[in-house]
Length: 278
Length: 259
Image 1: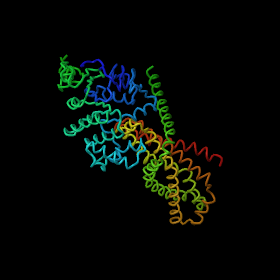
Image 2: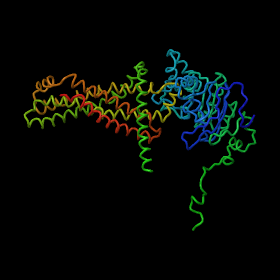
Image 3: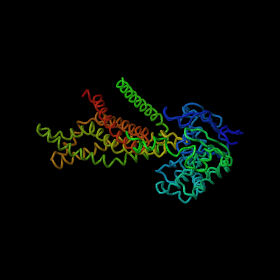
Image 4: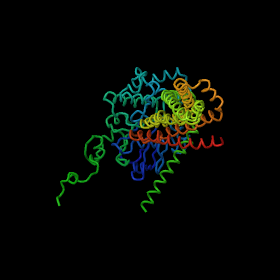
């Protein structure tokens, strides 16, 4: 069902309930936003830069507190002041950061092993096998000995993905997983996200502005506009078939339409001093 | 009215900063037991910030010892007290110059490195990544570095003083011609291990707490931009140095006032 109403879902894993958020009083990033993410599905949140997609992830992970409204994960309201609850929640999630956030003083192997060594009591021999399996899944088993300074941006993203799934989390959040990847890596990453979700039964949340990849792998797509306004949500097929001008502009990548290409500005004649002379 | 509002806003901002620093220090102390349980992390950091400060500390200690011996000799010889050179140099080093100069050098060498490292970890979202892995960065990153600073500083100050005394011995005995037996025996008689050396160690431990916590706080609270990290490293040196000098006066007054 295409529209702005919440989907009728059988098993909601994350609920965003009338959430309003701004980093300061002068700028609201999300405004009374309500969303639901179904358990075991891949949900993509699409939108242009600055529409609050990454902020949404941070609210779910409890990095920031909503100014009003509630974020509910698996029936539990996220309370950023309750550190014990936050850490309990975070042990169940894996996050792929936009720029990888790899530990630059560690090797590729050590980065993927890091959460296993820190969060579990697994023997080193088992960690060794698990790390190589995770690296194999992202095609980088052979790069395990490299330093982070020796890998390319695309490789770093794949290593970060291997680290995000190191402990087989129930919820995997991907912040711009396709940005900066070449076409082959992008296809591999998209397939990997889908496969991981199907194999592990995890709930996946993909934040992106890469429409074709997200449409190809998602079960449900949410389209946000500036100010965290919900434009539409539905299955990929429904969004692709939409006649709504704003949806069409975004999914087809048209430069101008309901969403303006130019940042609000004065008249061009005024800026270039071509106005009426006194 | 505007001026009043400006002063008020400024005062609020200063108090807020102090409050944040106090809370940070409290959290740092609370994270120490967890870091002690993983002492390997502390040892790694002692190597990173202690061992790697050795060259500058030893070189500076020797240079200070050379100059101190010459200057003291020029002053003492006029009063026929050149034989007490060893004692004057020793007390100057273990009571004051050792702890203070080591702390100032530590702030410049290890403090800036800590601030830049933590600041860049923050800019590269490594701190956020730890948080999202449910790993407390205060326990995993900050507390081991804090303990390493706490352990390293007194050891570095002791080495500074020791090398300084050896430097002074070289100049006093080799260059000036002071009797070596006298150089050492006057120190043996005049320096009290607990009162002089012990207080020097206490001072440098306090300076270790100051320099390391200032460096970590500046790194942790920095704006995650290249400019932010640059300003934070500068603030580390300025704040640490001023705090060390101020605290040195207070400690000296408390420790040596009755003598």
